[in-house]
Image (cartoon, rainbow over the protein chains, first blue to last red):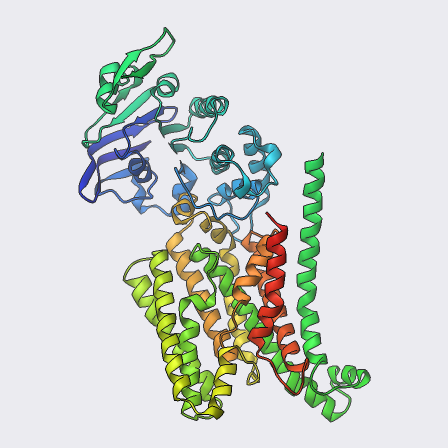
Length: 253
Length: 332
């Protein structure tokens, strides 16, 4: 169980969330929705232990994250960051292999399992032919998939994804969501910041809405992802679109 | 299929490059023992290497050329390692040992010793003091007071370097005509006083032993500190160790050879462009390549126009710049 207890996150001059209690259970897939600047990224960083909460705590199976070694945390909690430094000089394969760091015994060089895991992960995100290509020459969407492959190599129980669909074309957006759904079915817990309620409604059983006022709302997706709630969340009017398995809203003027 | 062939070819070229660097190290040392202002006949030279031959031959090879060549190699290796570490730490491809302000501090110390006419041993002594003082100021101002903020560390190092540069200009203005040549040589990198290779070699072994186990963590750090932490790296401890190793390497090299520019910049980048991006291979190859480059450059500097000597820093740059430019032009 990855849980936030009485979590308060602030940035200078503003409170992002106050008194947030939320728990991710294995097999659950959560959507994290909110307008720009509402604190989605800050919340994901806090859940990954990359940012100290201003109050409250994040716990991993009831142990506070802050008290665990980084390697131990990284074996259980993985995060797809929204942006990262682009100064990596190695190949796409070497990039994916870095996901293995938290698991390997030796510190000197990647172990034997790293390469096979990385090749399998690259194949899973459709990047196998790019394994030998320098990471920095990949396109934006290809990099995003390489990051997913690195997370597959890291193989955490808890997947925190910050805009996993960014830069992906429609086909690869679907592939990424299917991948996430498979992970959840296999017992991993997922929470992902999304900007598209359509994907959230189709793939996530739970949703957490962060309003820019510091308030929040969470629960089962079908109760949270309603027209009223989403209109209030994004400050725009929505209209229900055609019949579909999951509720689908399009913005209107 | 074409991709596969290209990958195989790239792999073969990388092996060739690694072999060349590894061979260059002993070759540069041998060249340092072979070339010089005095020609030692081949038979005498080989006999001297084995510990026999004429006394003059032994004296030249073992008492004059060997300590200097060994010092040059160690200094080059230290500077290249410091450069490789700093480029990751500061996430800036232009980072090199001079950016810490440590070289500037050493210059102030060395020039003060020359200006005051202190005995020869005082020059490296005061250079060491100046380098340590600059490193200490940087540590306190940038690292302790502000945490590890890359931009602040860089700016603080540049500011310390600029301050030291101003003092160096003052010292040059105060110096007599006779002192100025010695000062300029020191500022351009000078190994003529490097008769005791033990100190830089001890520093080199210590730095290599400290840095090599960090290799994987440095790989992760190239993705930025936040990403590295998310992968499980203890970022603070890694940065502190790497920074300490880079500082020790710079201080040890600058104290012996003066601020030889460009080695710390060109060697790691040339290796990265040649395809060695992982620090497990980059660090040892940078050490060997940097050592070979400075040992060869120093041999050239003292024997090309003997008895005239060129500043080793100038020769290093003259050799290194075309290599880097060629690699930049060839690779995407």
